[in-house]
Amino acid sequence: MRKTLLLFICCIALISCNSKKTEQVTTENAITDSVTTEKSNYEITCNGARNIMLSSTVTEIETLVGKENMQYDSVFAEGEFATMSLVVFKDKPEELIFYSQEESEIPFKNISAIKIQQKNSPYSFANGIKIGTPIAELEKLNGNVPVSFTGFGWDYEGGFLSFNKGKLETELPCFGGRFYFDDKSTNQNEVLGDAEFKSNQPEVKKIGVYVSEIIIANRH
Image (tube, rainbow, N blue to C red; front, side, top):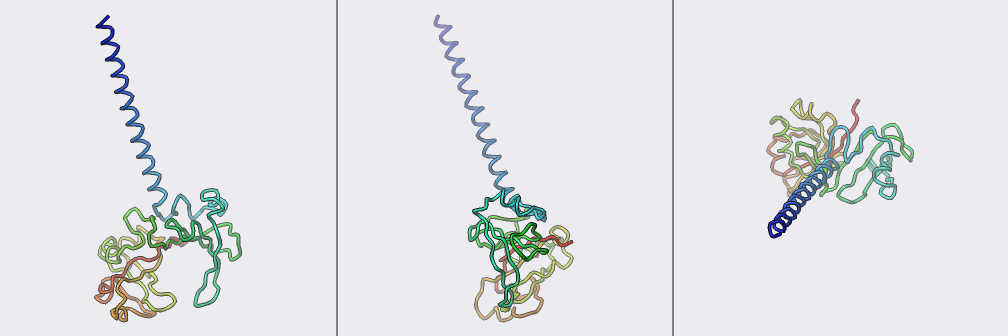
């Protein structure tokens, strides 16, 4: 009887132990799946961001994010109305802004570009490029080939121009956006106006230029 009782207790302990192991594996799998899903939600590729593709229709976007998280905004250039944009999760870290190249009236049916601009945005490319990435880091990822942009202090300030045939030109053919800078002292006066500047110039290095906007677009 005592042997039977001990055997029974051992069996209960073994079942309990196996149950905990199974539960632990299941929990770990759930955590891994959650991390993978979160990463895919915030990864930028030349196809899209947050599981929203450049080929997605606005109807599909509404299904993914919910109509309550969508609104249209006016876009101005040189002080004049230029076009409309579709914004999801406006003013939140996960905000995305959509443009339609072919359509000027709302509601859009299709999109052709996605812009990311929030300072604390969670979105990034697989190589780590995101809002706040120093232009020196882009140069490094570009195979140490300088990155070109327009000067500051005018309507199209800090606009990305070219990877100058560096690695990123083939890796990220969809890339566009803007740069800004940390140092607001008189050093910025050396990087002003409608002119081309490069990441390896001493005056650019002085002011701490970084990625302030990312735009991915269909360029075909």
